[in-house]
Image (cartoon, rainbow over all chains, first blue to last red; front, side, top):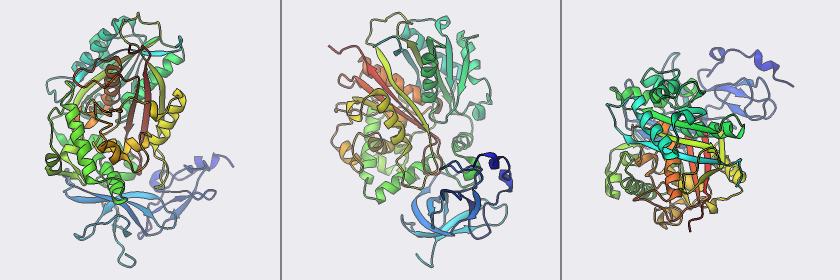
Length: 131
Length: 392
């Protein structure tokens, strides 16, 4: 054990954040804590260099809000959500698109990953297979 | 009481609001000189300064030496000036640094100052600066901002049946009513429930009249080891607890950061929530006050709406909360907010809060949070103050 391995993890720009279908971060091999994006040291148990891990593409919408204040380059309204990814994945914020339907707390959602360089890079949609 | 006691020797504020013609130096000058006058001391009596500000780097371009640049305007040079940035909790974080400096024996009299100037020619710049209170490496480009973070926290509690939209409206009405009685407040108009509900949507369930807004202002506190400043003859107020904590990676189910920080503060003081007589809590959106009731232990989880409905948290109640109007009505000049809370509590504990005075409070609690991580605040500070002079 020790922190030495944290000196040699890839720089943040070289850590993958998705695999095209799901979000990628890290999961601690010792305590199982998940984080997105990957970190150099586990936030829960302090173990260095938690392994890269691709999380479930599905999750539960914990809560959401529709923002009505536009910003330059960001037309309103748009919907944001907080999602707990399945299989003990991390809790992440992201845009939610529902094709006009009202999102619901507890709803099953699926992550969608956009093209390289897109903003936002990922967002959530209702999971039509389970939801 | 002993010589290790740290007393609030003086407080001062520049009113919160829109002050287009006033610079950072002007805002800071009024707050600091007012606090020094209140303490009955001069600028050369100050051993050290902690200067809080969150946004002057982005909004005024004064990224470095913010404190030194505003303090020289009031003749404070040579003594150490330390700049403190912790988003919306910058002011309370600076206060804590001053407490630690006095406890360490490195200073006897410390000026703690917070200043913010958020009104600039382009509102989009202010909103972008506020957005930097998150980990931009993680959330940049999503469109996440304070209102959305609070909207999501409240939605979750409403969905769980722990709060109602009526509760959100009622606490916002209370906030404005208190603000209307505070000459330092930005928003001084009484509003009706219909006006709150009918104001434009910001980030649902939040409407405009539930939210704090862009604000200029400054606040300052003179902290002193007991005996270092000649007695003023007024009621003495001392620091009973000073705690700070950083947010954590949430799984969605842990105790809140505020809960953790408040528990540490109560333990430090040997006090509990039942001992608190008046509180200033972090309500960047007025309904966040309801969340704070539970996290600070003022009521059990799920009872915040009932506590509000009982009237206990009104100025005339047994536990007035945000008698100043809170962030949402007094105003939220980000870097000054934590010290504005301390100024208000000091006035309340001394019995000087004209027009909004709580009934003979002895213990005051200040709760100031800042920034956000994935679902949690990035910073929380809780201070407990005590009036040591008997009321009779």
